[in-house]
Image (cartoon, rainbow, N blue to C red; front, top):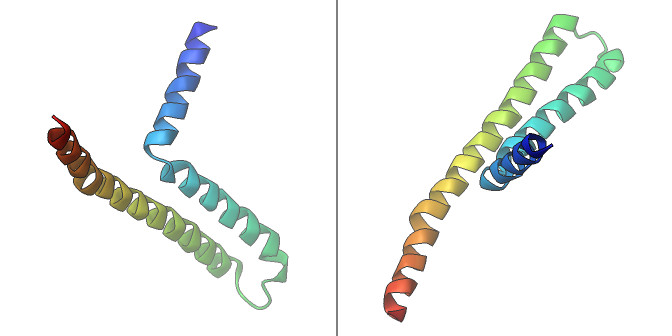
Length: 92
């Protein structure tokens, strides 16, 4: 039971460190589900073209979420932490 709690806390810690990873996964599955539901109304579009568009949209969302996550982590590392260090030095 303790290994389960340990893994759960590790998962929650990872999600708090990188919140854009679960967001990217959720968006990926959401886009795929939406496009699969819309498949019957695709009109004259070939199946292969519809699937390619679905894949590109889902991958684009994931890449966008990863990019935003990297930019957010860089902002935290290079802008927020130096300000906190300066405040700590001023209070000494």
